[in-house]
Image (cartoon, rainbow, N blue to C red; front, side, top):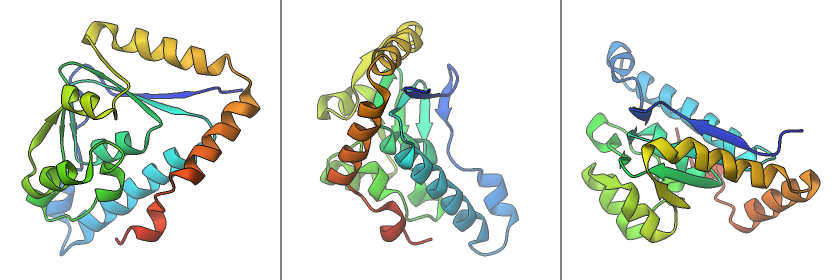
Length: 178
């Protein structure tokens, strides 16, 4: 049985965000709306995953990547990680619900309205990132954390995740409009 799931990118980026070229090729808002819907489906799948999902984030984490990380159960980031919600520069108005998983409301509003960067250390200070480590130690730390969780009784871990989700329900599908 799977005890925990780890999501990671590469040493340069966790996720670079949506495909801007695809959005530009499609007429009207079809490109951005399609990517928003696909991003929402990804976030819902992570939230509904029966086991804890741990994000191992390094380098750039932009747009949809921030939203994916925002719904993960635990986040560990390399010290060089830069988060940016630049949807405002690309004609989108989405992501607030997921971003609240990483930032306090007023800081989240500033990040969404400005498209500015937020560093891993700042998010760690808010308590939304479990730990910040060096890039070369990131996967070792995340794998050790996943192993600790996987060593627990699987039924209890799954029940715990379900209970936490009910206690902190964000209603991604109900509140999202795409």
